[in-house]
Structures are given as structure tokens and as C-alpha cells.
Image (tube, rainbow, N blue to C red):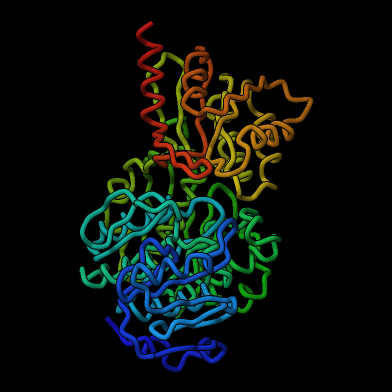
Length: 502
């Protein structure tokens, strides 16, 4: 428990707040969900996409909340409750949560970008652990608060402050020295201010293309929010970016000290980069690399064949070396990183000459990267893809994803990803509209994803490769007001067993 007024001492954010009631109440937790309120909770009421949190203030108080953070003027105020009114309730929540749940580990390493965040986090975590750094991890895929590596229970890559800051405090209690944190554009945006109170000891930006325009509205806003990760770096903290980073000319990057920037690249793209890899040989299962970094020159066999994963590895190595605690040249990097990453290029080869691959690709850029690699690695095979697109998210990427798939694929199955409260079939029709009329791809719309997977496997022929995209590691499909359990790997295994039994 902490005294409420102690949580905002000397904070300018609260100078713009209207506070009604006792500012010295004892508080113990914070939440955006009135159902999670208990005695001495802070409840944050904000206007969401579908729900206005102000409608649940009475329920929050009934469940024990003694402090309400809100943006709208209320019709009544209770004497036994404290109210904090501010036009930015999420920013207030972030600041209060940061002060309420601390202290935290000294070093938090942020990994952001449009694609490849989770895999880069996993590689960096593995490298640090192999170097005997007491390291924690929070990514879309998995987490470790110092008590062991396990699947992440959160649907958000960077969870809300009521989960994020308790996680970071558990890391501190478990004597973690360094946290690898997947940091999304939503979390970095001032709209949520989820990570605004954090100062990072290092940052990796994998790439920036275009995504989440439903939230950021424009690419310019998206880029600016992403670059908050640079603004939040501690003095002397390193920044890792690709050698051909699209926004090197952005004022935030141009003003950053050049001696603190480390770059990575592969295969003739900026060979002067600090970390560089050249492909010696590649097939569908692995890539043989000649690597050069600050602390290492080596030839290694890398069990992730698509080039994007080599870039993720190089980014992780660059950050590990930049932190000054890791000598990559003295460790077995192959042993550290050559383990599967859940839902990332998982190759299932149970049918003769008809492999199935599960991958999390779900953006225009990741589609182009994956499909072009498959075409190069398996030039004689026909590409079959099954995918959808999330509802209530960036609609601008639907047609481009369809266009790219139509360019490479022989057959396409369009199926649910997470339609939420949008019409599932309408989403799939929007993707189909992007498939150019000149495309020879046969398109099947089967919204029910398990049925679509079963059909795709049943119709898969020798000489074809099936790509199941967009779900990867996820364990559910989100529909309007319900979540349906779903495991892509289990679903395809059952379909394969059924086909092999025939």
C-alpha cells in the first residue's frame, strides 16, 4: 500500500488535474476493468473504441475502488471516494502505476519495429542468458520474470500498466539485472503513455514500415510514436537500427549521437554495418552464414532460413555487444539461438514433397519477405497460403496483403484471424479485392479457420507448399464478445493425421 499523493510528487501531469476528495488515501492496485477492482483500487475510466469506462464507475466503487481517474465531468461525487480528472487518464494511470508498483530492475532494453520484434526479443534474451546475465523477458510469445521461461498470457505485446509494472517489479524481486521488453507503437504513443515513465538502457528498432493506422491515423504519427523509444533512452544508452533504416534522416535519428548508434545488415546491404552476415548457402530449413560483429568472426549454421530472421539475430547480437556485458565471440551462438521460436517459421514436413509452414507473418512487408523467400528456396513448388486479417485494426493493409499473396500464390484460402466485432466475411472480401485480376490464384473463402485448415491440408498436393499465416503462437480466435480456443499447430496436425490415414 502507498499513499496516493506520494505517487505524483513533483509531477507536472497532476498540475493539470482536478482532484476532488482525500488525496492521501492508501492505494494498492490500479485497473481499467471495474470487475477487477478490490478494496483500495484505483479505477481508470477512459473512452475506449466500444466502451466508455465512465459507465462503470459505480460498479468499480461497489467492488471496492476508492480512487477514480476520469476525463469527463461527473454528475455526482461521493465523499468516500477520491476523483482525479484529467484529459489524459491513460497518462495519469501510467504515472500512478509506475510509482505504485516499483522499484524495478535498473536496465530495461526496448525492442520495437513493425516486424520481427518478438523474434529479436527471444534471440537477445537467449544470448544474454547464455552469457550468464540475469535476464528477464516480456514479448508477444513468452515471458520470464526471473522465475522461468513460459508462454505469455497476454494478448497485447506490451500489456496494460496494471500488468506491465507488476511484472517489472517481480523482475526486481527476483534479482533480475536486465529486462528485454517488446515495446509496441501503442505502448510508446502518448495516447496510452503505457511506457512513458520508463527510461531505457538500450533500444532496438527492427524496421518501420506501416501498421496500426487505425490507432495512429497516419504513417507520420506512427513513425513519431515509434521513435519515442529513442527519446526515452538514458544518456549513453545504445540504439540499434538496420544499415538501411528507412528513417535515418528523421530529426530524432539525426540528432542522436552517432557514436551510440550500431547498425546491422546482410548480403551486400551496407557491408560497413557494425554487425554483418553473408549467406553462404540456404535451403528451406537453414541458412549458412559468414558473420562479422564487433566481437566475433565466425561461420554458423542458422536454423531459421528466411532472411528476416538473420536480421533479427544480427539486431540481437548488436545490442548484446553494445551493452558491454557480453562477449559474443566467447560463446556458442549457434547453441544459444538455434531453438524453435513459437509460431515463427515452424516447418512441418509429414507429407511427401508437400511441406506445411506455420508463420506469424501478418503485414504487407512480412508477406513480401516470406513469399519471395519461399519462391527462391523452392522455385519449382507451387505456393498455397491460408490467412486472414484482424478485425477492428488497420484496414489499409488488407488489400496490399491480398495483392502480394495473389502475385506469388497458386491457391489462397481466406479464413478468420481475429475478426472481433467486424463482419468476418466482409474482412475476407476486402482482402480478396486486393488480389489483382491478372493473378492466376484460385481463391477460396472459408471463414471458419479450423475448417479452412482441414480443407487446405486435404487439397494439398505433392509439389505444393502450404503457408498458414497470421496466428502463429496464438491460442485463440477473438470474435465479438467471445474468444474461441484455437491452436494452429494442433489443428494442422489433426488434419495431417486424417489425410495420412486415408
